[in-house]
Image (tube, rainbow, N blue to C red):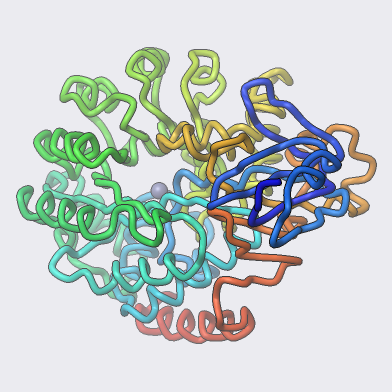
Length: 473
Ligand SMILES: [Zn+2]
C-alpha cells in the first residue's frame, strides 16, 4: 500500500480533464506535492495509507483557481475610487499617485491582504502585473515577494517595463485630465521611464534571482506595461527573455481605443515586430477587430479577459465570443482590486457569461463549461502551465479547492459546474491546498501566522494614511 501524504475524500471531483469528467463520491490522493490518484473514495482509501485525510463532506472538489491578470498594491486604494472616471482619469488621478506614494511596508500589507482575499476565494495561482516599478531599488518588489512566499500559493510576478515616454499630444491630454484632481500629488509622467538596456538588465537579474524560488511557487515574467511606452527592441528582448528562461511575457493591449492610435492596429504591430506567439499573454484586447482576432489565433497568442474591469471603466466588451470561435485560449482575470472590486474569480463568472450573452443577444455564447474553464484549465494554458496546473489529473501539481455546496442558493445543484458559474459567490470555498500543502481549512488561513483581523485593521490604518498623504478628495 503506497504511503500518501494527503487524501481529499468524499466529494464530487470536477476534474477539468480533456473529457471534463465529473466523479461523484470520489477522492484525490496527493504525494510529494503532486496528484497521485483520482477515483472513487472507497478505492482510494483502500489503496492508500495517508498521513492526512481531509473529508470534503459531500462538497465539490475543484482545481485551485488561476487568476491570469491582476494587480496587487492598489488594493489599499479601495474605496477611494470616485465614480465616473474613464481609464486615463482613473490611472493618472487615482492609481499612479497612490501606488507611487506607497512605502515597502504598505506594499507588504497590500500583498498580505491580497493573498488572504485570494485564498478565501479559492485562488492558488495569480499573475501580478506590476505596472509601477522603479528599477533603481528592488525593496518594494522584494517586500511583496517575501509575502507571496509566506502565502503558500503560487504567484507570477510580471515585472513592469517602460522604456519610452508617451508622445506630446498624449502628455498634454494627461496633464489636462490631471487638472480634475489638483489636490492630488501627481508623480511626473516620465517617472517610470527607464533606459532600454537598464530595464532589460534589471528584469533579467530579477528573473535569475527569484524565478522558481519559494519551492517553485514563485515565477518572474518580463512584462512591457503598454504598447505606447515600450520600444520595438524592448518588446523583442522581452519575448527573447521569456524564451531564454522558459517563462511567458505579458502586456496590456487595446484596453481603450484612445490610448492606441496608429496606422496599424496594436495586434498587427505586435505581430510585425515578433512579440506574438505562444509565450505572449495579452491583457484586455477590448478594442480589436476580426482581423486582430485571426492574428491572435494564428500565432497561438493567449488572452487574459478582464470583464469586470472593462465594465467598470466602460471600455466595452472584448470580442471574447469571436476569440473562442477562433480557438483562442482565453483566461479570466480579476484585474485591479479597485476596478472590480474583488479578487474573486468565481463571483466574476456569472457576470461575465451573462454579460456576453446579453451583449450578443445569443444565449449560446460563452457557455457555462467554457466560463469555468477560463478560471481553471484555460487559465493554466493562458499562463503556459497547462502541463502542471488547471485540472485534477494524475501527475499534475496538487492545487485543489473544496467548495461547500450546502447552502440554500446552491440547492438543488444537479450540475455542480452550473452551480459554480451561475449561483456560487466565492465565499463557499472551504479549503485550499497548494503544492500539496493545506493553506486554508474550514476557512481558516493556515499559511500566515498573523490573524486575519489584525491584517485587516493594519490595512485599514495604512490605507487611510495613504489616501490622506496623496490628497484624494
Ligand atoms: Zn491590468
